[in-house]
Image (tube, helix red, strand yellow):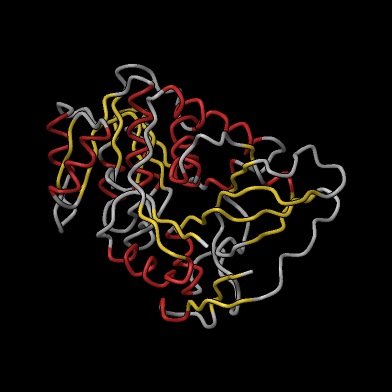
Length: 322
């Protein structure tokens, strides 16, 4: 089999293709999978650098997300060889083969494209849209980085629930992407991240009922100030650096709330990953959930995929094909 190794923590030049033996045969409760594609995510970049709570020492095989077909199964597994499956929390996914616990995969239809079958971004959008508020028609919601892979999908999910959605982006090109995803209004904050005045103008001074922020340092303080009475701001990423500390006293009079989120915290219970995956498939098949355009790289070009993702010049999903 082939796999990518992070030989040392640091830049993308440390991602090296290696050949090795096949993945081990599945034990009880496990499946062996031939990888069709491995998703590339910002979390992979942080792991490569040795940053974040999930950091690990080098060398290691990066990647957590993928889609593939079952080659063989161990005892006590209801899945069958040849079945197509997806996963989002299996370390070592930058490889042509994997052996993993059966509980970590979800069966998916053959008709899904690779871009549709890579669930990391869609499942992030799904839990964000459903776990912090029972979104109702007319609710006002803001989405930072609305042109990103998660941002586009989150906008679609919120629009499916009937929300009025304002997205923020850093360029007019990205603003067009956010509008195409369904955002009612888009604020292009350029390079200075100043959006609060425009957000309050658009909402007639009220603010939004729910706000999602994956940017962190550059935006989160203003995201909180843009909440309506009783509103909630959800921090689920820190692409510009860690979000600033917020004094709880500032939340008292407006009765606002701050929450944090990670998709991994919402797939802990047995069957939860499979249930959320099934809801994504329903949205795709119904036509209201459309995956962003995907960009494919050969597995050997994992370093190029990382460079392109870090440049923030890409839109939608990036993935590797063994």
